[in-house]
Image 1 (tube, rainbow, N blue to C red):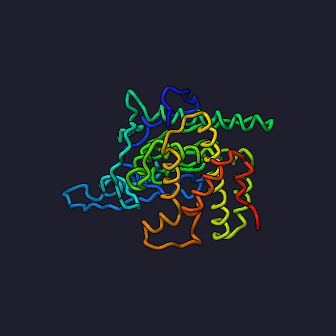
Image 2 (cartoon, one colour; image 1 turned 30 degrees about the vertical axis):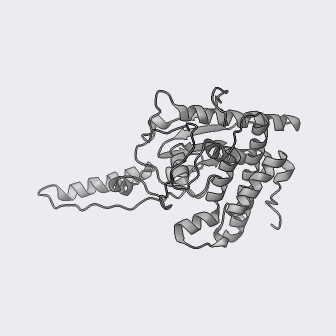
Image 3 (cartoon, one colour; image 1 turned 135 degrees about the vertical axis):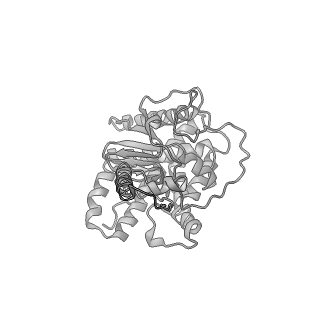
Amino acid sequence: MRWRGRRESSNIEDVRGGSRGGRGGGFQIPGGLGRNRTGAGRRGGTRMRRAGGGGFGTIIILVVLFFLLRSCGINPLDMLAGGGGSFVPDQTRQTTRTTPMPQTNGSGQAPANDEMKQFVGVILAETENVWNGIFQQQGRQYPEPKLVMFYDSIRSACGQASSATGPFYCPGDSKVYLDTNFFDTLAKRFDASGDFAQAYVIAHEVGHHVQNVIGVLPKFNQMRRSLSRAEVNAMSVRVELQADCFAGIWAHYTNQKGLLEKGDVEEALNAATQIGDDAIQRRTQGYVVPESFSHGTSKQRRAWFLAGFESGRLASCDTKVFEGY
């Protein structure tokens, strides 16, 4: 994607420098709608030796420290194990892409020349351009979301979240949350590299913001209280697929500007394929449980992204979210 040298959004909140250290875990699927914030941590342990004097007091101090860290969103077991974990097998593949990709530094500290922040700022700005234009055509104003770049863990209006949550949108504060080290996970563990794969993830989360503005998310969150788990999952799939379609709409207009390069759309489609519910379940547990799907299959995610990309129209993104409920 030809993103360098373009306008960067002013709606970026970079809190990586003040975030807690430790290696981030994996993720399930981009887009959380402010829910299912369960980190997948790797269990660890340590043996305590008996020491002369003060042993019981030391245990009390350690117990207090344990719960203090837990209340701050840090899993002490992860720290003892040498970092957070992921339930997705590491399947790193060599990439042949020659265009330099935005990089994270793996430390949580923003480097002096922070290319990743520039990239995220440009992509967010491009989503602002597209959705401002679409809303203006409908005689409405588009309230631009904030995007929070964090490292390891963050507290939002939707609660505490860790890197294991993956990128998510919180309707409570209308913000997109992104641990940019997630992009390393996307490339190495999900075999979905490329700058446009990363752009697709951001555009998907912004798609949830659009849903929040037009009333889809508020109605979904209201209805889910009276639905069974299976019904909530089924509705959630339709919500997520609509966000994929909205990401496709953004890609449609971005392509019209001549910003897409050869292979960009394929990168987004590959990312959509790798993070389908069925693909993730096959990787992680070896079998598929359709009734547990909450984001859609690989085929569905590809199809709805393409629906938005090929048409550029909101009407093409009617996933029948509330049909039958």
